[in-house]
Length: 239
Length: 239
DNA sequence: ATATTTATGTTAAATTAATCACATACGGGG
DNA sequence: CCCCGTATGTGATTAATTTAACATAAATAT
Image (cartoon, rainbow over all chains, first blue to last red):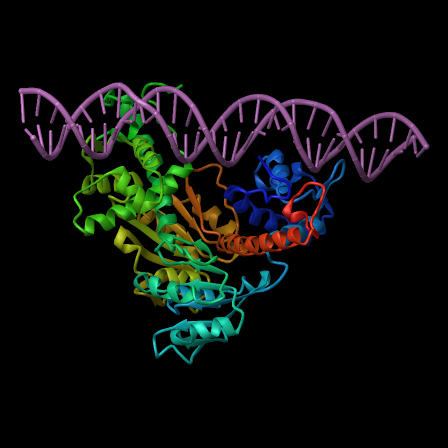
């Protein structure tokens, strides 16, 4: 039962689709497309028109019957929902390979995400700059973040340092952690959002899919040859 | 209805959890833990014991009633399911920031993923090595991949080059594409698995969550002050 | 040996998500 | 100004996923 005035819980599946909408609408906007229907979006995105309408209705009534959606308006609305109507300040913690790559990546600023500092323990890195972003010692991190209204901390430190860094971050005003370490972060006391980018998980998922088709081939081959019978007819039980 | 001998379709949700099981079991193995119950795994992973049992049963009967699961055996089984009982050959396409960072990352080899070559169009990079991995011109890519039994192509090229590269990859024996470009790849003709790592999407999801809590605060504040009523009681409709 | 405890594999129930279907409202054309 | 076509927003339906429940089999203790 939904109490009056209560916030409707939006499922993660919907939230994960929002960036797709945002991107697609951005492209339409650049092509000077004025209006778009859920059906047209369906073709572009590969979701059903029904799902698109229902997704958007979690956040408001942005369309107009008989007309569709105004591209510019819907783009603005989704930007607001995603919190990218205002810009964000980020710091990168850990100036290793990945940290440096992210610091050099130009794409974030286009969406209002600005990297303003990097932190590292390595004295030979501290004082240097990457893509014109200064590297400071980790000891200064807590003070710096609070002082400069940093929203987002990008975690690219080695696995064993993660816990220590997260502990420090809970003392700051940081609102979100973009976690590239393989560790699953859990923060109890404070309201800090965490988004994990577990690259190894992603690679293993790919490996599964590669393997899956191979298993199927083998499975069918063995079935053809009459080699395959097991108690439950499970493909993966094949020895 | 499941026909005898037919492969049971495993849902993506399950597949995405497999790497978590794999990682967790690896840690238990290193701690010399011999056996583990679904309940213990539940505590470690944060999934329900019921879900864990059901997930694993998609692939076989690995446990024993009254005992639980043998850690080493289950680890091996999951490794097989994920296709990491054998090693994989990878190439990186695009020696930019991200491509170089991935080339320098040591963690892949530990799971049997070996990067054997990098390809780039930039003549000043070709001929050099990154982390002892040679950089070749993109023109040699097709030949090289087929010649060296490359399984996986890691795509870290600029957005506008993606389509061209994917087209070339469909002519090769590559089995999977690990896609770091923002483009959504669709391959019709050939059976190539694609796993996307859309970093911007991930960052926007984080931004949403940061924004979400702020919206809620504002929502409650306005409700307290009696400022908030709209036709549908939707939080996001607040002006 | 036998009883008791434990923890699986699996079926059933509950929950959640996606799709369908349609009444309704708006825009455009005559 | 009115009618017709279009495409939304939403309630109903269906599908998928998660959780619960339990019968059963193995391990352990007596």
